[in-house]
Image (cartoon, rainbow, N blue to C red):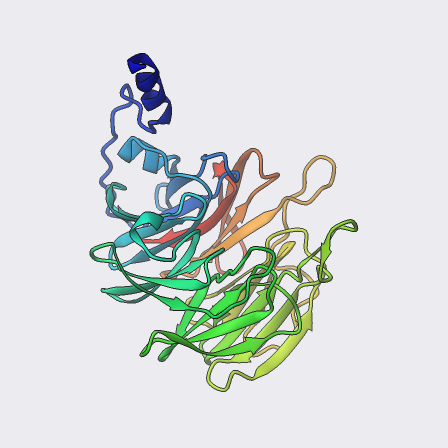
Length: 362
């Protein structure tokens, strides 16, 4: 029995006694790249890229902490000098030192009342942050300084196929907008003064996947349109792009897009005057335009069979406007990151972990 217990303990450990923790001390303006990995494989990783030296360090979480990041890395944000990583299927949020990559704190599902699968984090101030969730009908509130659970906000959503999802979050005045992705067509509006849902926006298309806010106070939303596979379908798989007035909640623009084979995403340039969107390729449009251009701004690479790579994430450096595009390739091999100037000139291309999905800029 003792031998069995020792074997079980060794098998469940994430640490490697023969692998020493590496010491990092990066104080530059580098870029974190979160790599989602494969669902239920526990192979999420974190990469770090120095745009000055063009050096990329892969697997820095494991190397700095002698433990694995976890399963299904969903998002990464930097706030007040700390990097926060939401690990969806592991049910954990890590707080990391941005110079040493060492763990400074963590919040797990067992420490909260309603958090199940954390997706994105929105920071209200140094003591309050919201966490969206894939399955829970609640937004979790926690203290980023102490990594302690504070409370929760009921979204009052009805379950659909087992999901109660909330996704990205964007603040505007005393409001926070969050898109309900899985099997939904709603944008919820949260009153941050009372920590409660006060309104909602119903869209004509299903599954709002990504959002961005421009300089004029217009909320941009892109849907993936659900899915259509023939035997198993939900909606029509036709993405839509919306522009919504963040003050009046009026839908001002609704454009149908090409059927997507990739992960639809949105981002803006640093001053909020230009919108970037992934819909198979990358498109760029001024925020005062009323239609997505026909020609892509950046085209996805293709393999030897002519099949388009799967662009999976986009981030814009707030310091200089450079564009970073994450390429999942085929979701099995190491992904690729492309770094472009603001006008679309390729500056660099490098390999990271499996399924890179998001960026955080120091």
